Length: 442
Image (cartoon, rainbow, N blue to C red; front, top):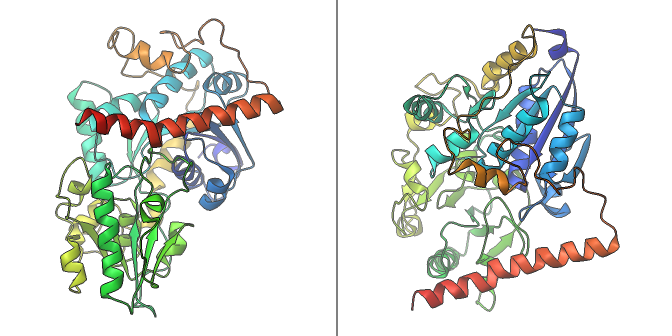
């Protein structure tokens, strides 16, 4: 392993939401050798989902520095002082824009190892999302199942698939489940955008409340991702907090926030539609139910759990059913791999291959070649320019004329205007847009 990989490393993470910051920062820690002295610099891409101070505190991941930036400002800084490793924890379109912007900023000169991937379960836009991430040195797959799918997509379009690297979700861990708590605790892990309509969300809330009434000896918790007005990776138009207002809630029913790992410490049954929290629970051997009440459908993401043994309805859960996961399925998802019949290996070594690849790339004689995304002005002339323009970049990845190279620290007036603009955007998303959609359905 080269000296640069064992003595001192500077790692940067660019993230656009609270969950992606958590994934990116924890991935950065997993990718660096234990013996290395690592400096972690965090950058939060300014946008609709830029995390609040409360969300960052709840995530609980610390960095040596952390600040909010525009895309153009980030590219300028990377061009002036690049790290050794860069993790792009962004939505696919933003990854693609940064890859082209960084290619223009670095040219044929020295550059860092660029890593990207997915926060959790990949259940929609598989091909679109993967091709937007193509061009990074490592495209991380959170399981053997995902790695096979990722390679098949790249090879199917004639793109280089060597970047696909199998790892695991970086936030798995915690104490394994050993038995029931007192009181027995049922946790429903809410999702911001699944399901995406008032009727289905109200149905799930009512069934959860009804479960609490049917089982007064149990503690029933609704685990929420964000408070009203905050955004996560996905937009939440109908927060459960608002749907619960005015309802007669039983004494054993509570709405809770906080770190998912801490909530799982007291969980006896995790219930969700398709949240990544299911994988966290399965890794800890906590009984886990993926709801079928609204169907098993791609739009819900619960189709990903076909074959898991975890699919169940509220009717079954009310009657006392506890799903038993299929060991082979669980192992292929990169969770609970210790001691499984499939010989999936240990979670502790899940990042070894990625770490070795990064060390080799850092020590590559002559440095690394320029970034080479699959999408170019030649291969996608009707798609790529629009993606780049949303980040104020031209077709060549260079910032468009008139865009400042750096964003000055906002003064009091600009801070007020920025907060007002975000408030207006969120009001439009959470209040106006649903009304317009309902009117369109009349």
